[in-house]
Image 1 (cartoon, helix red, strand yellow):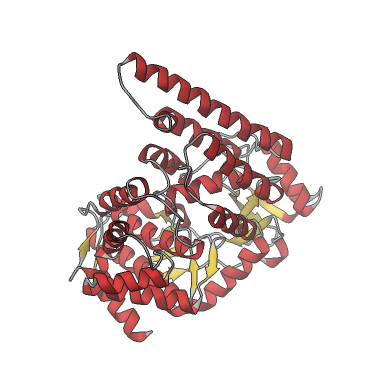
Image 2 (cartoon, rainbow, N blue to C red):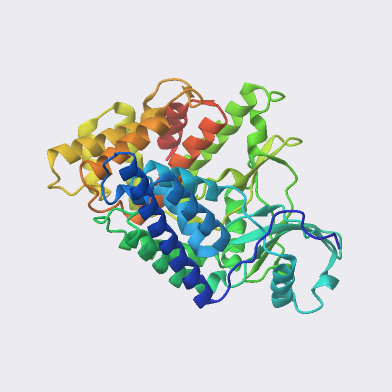
Length: 444
């Protein structure tokens, strides 16, 4: 067995009471931070609303730090809010929560050993020729370790943090309450549907046997594909709390941004990723909704992209797929009237919406479809689209009133599309998004 972990680690709070206490402490910290910010602004002669003092950069950093240490559903909900609900959050909070999408702390070796004993029994070491205690990755639900089985299979083991599955319900409810009490979420924001969907999605992500099924299904959908590789599943070592997969050797996708790689390679990878999103939405109707950089690897020897995480995979209904096809087609034509019809169909707009708020939402939808409207390669690397979209979403939420957020199924799909645009931007890639959409929608 390999030595102890060299990564920074911290104990995952396990019991329900301990996790409730941590979230309560978070709310208290934010309240104290808001009071301190109010005093600081008054001393400086500044005037500010009662709510604005709670969304200072200091409070945002406290929120991200505490959620990162808790992991589990609390951290995952922070990730979801940072990626798909930026129109609910001030920029300071969304930016601070973005750190939750990076690698996190790992659990201490004692907790790790406990999780392995729980899954495999006291003699868990006998199943492996090698086990590396230093994780390859550590995220919100679990961490990944390299291992070699007794028969020589080279494995990646995703080990779930203790108590994560049991704490989802209380974590999500208590964190939502803390965000309301601390006034980080707008008071008029009705996120009950998002909360219910977050619970359902997190319960599915915490079921590693379900993820194993998703991996097998995705592997079948991409059978023979030359752009992507999906790791195989090893059922004899997979449990509800540990997922055993083939280890995919490769480089972090971000390494393609290095000077040793030509721009054409970045363009190729980004084109493949955006093309895959369109296939997921219109051909497979099965979407992996977490476009985190850590979920992809570049395999240099094969010039393929490894797809590592199917925990957030979800079905897309035929009606939602059809609505997105209509949305993209309307965006490609620059047809605001058609965008309005689709927005009502997707329940993004009530039929009786005010003209001012309707115009603000249509502005946002035009931005969301801008890469598909552009003829020829869209240069994500130089585009300020993310900034313009953030500003438009903030205007919609805080100037025109939030009312109800979009339906959860729309938010999860939009998370994948918008997140893939961000991947393309991080890769500084040029992608013919319109050409991809035309070919996909024509063959649909």
